[in-house]
Amino acid sequence: MHDIRFIRENPEAFDAAMRARGLEAQSARLIELDRARREATTARQELETERNAKSRLIGQAKAKGDEAEFERLRAEVEALKAKMEEADEAARKGDELLDQHLASLPNMPHEDVPVGADESANEEVRGWGEPKAYDFEVRDHVALGEGLNGLDFESAAAMSGARFAVMSGPVSRLHRALAAFMLDIHTAEHGYREVSPPYMVRDEALFGTGQLPKFAEDLFRADHHWLIPTAEVPLTNIVRDAIHAEDKFPLRMTAHTPCFRSEAGSAGRDTRGLIRMHQFDKVELVSIVKPEESEDELERMTNCAEEILRRLELPYRVMLLSTGDMGFAARKTYDLEVWLPSQDTYREISSCSDCGDFQARRMNARFRREGEKKPEFLHTLNGSGVAVGRALVAVLENHQRADGTIAIPKALQPYLGGVEVLTAS
Image (cartoon, rainbow, N blue to C red; front, side, top):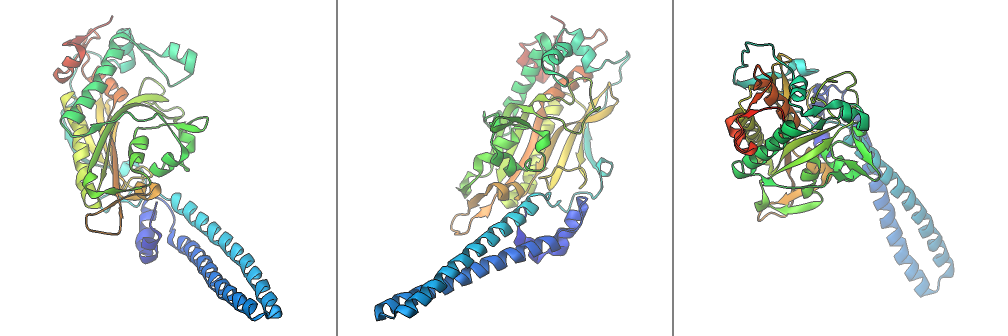
């Protein structure tokens, strides 16, 4: 959500930011809506002042016994009440129109973000590791998982449809080990507090993080709730609708949850395997910080996610996303892309974003500095630490051996009871 006062004072800067996000100039329309809203509010206040003054005169007329004056003033007060109701309705509609327009607009990009229409304008920041050279024909994760007797897409399709999978045996065990490994690293070494949040939320929570109203088609509805598309939603909303003490921050949280996405608009993309599923697991990282801390916190969070990939011995690169490729609520985003041998390319496995005060304004999440009276909006950040299913894909493919077995990275072996090679069972 945007601050209308900032837009009034910096219309050119706001329009430039929206153009960078692929939109037309917005400030003139927003300022006009704000003007109409404020005029209606002012008119209502003036009518109330006039009504109060005439109400006092009514008392005086009654005390004097001036019946004619009493009736005249009472009629005028009733007329003013009707006008006040009209002004109230105009102000309410003005607020609603302005809020709807503001809520539909994406976050302003940080000055560091490259301007571009799509992913072609993304910039590589750094890389780690070298893709392995194999002396045999590499298999993709589907063939590897099926060879381990641990991936079954047919049974999943029969009960649930496309973009679902049944994992079992060694693959299911590897999936569980990856999630536990990530949680242990983030809690014991990176200072995140583990949280087990609800998997279903109300409209307000999704509005707060920016998925509603614009991206409803990407979500799954369950009666009066929504299934979470990411743990970012419940974790970030923990601080909503409150003024917090300054010493509570930075607040760092992590959660391992299933995520549910309709994948609207992705027909025909990644139809094979685990890359793009309706249900998948992710270890999420969320940081809630004071405004001056958010830029450094993004670098810290991204490094925490990178550490998972380094310990899993997976080659990756860090991409700074362009204005046209960033998410709706983000002002700056790093994507971590892991190497997939079967595709001979890098694919996203984590996305770490600084949202500034954009989400905090939508959920009214504030803090008060010690000794200060006026509260300030917090800054929120989120990132995958990392997507468990995609980490599974990357481990299977990067650490495959000629016979179809999987060499387990040393850091992960304790989570598999010391197993060094994953075999069919």
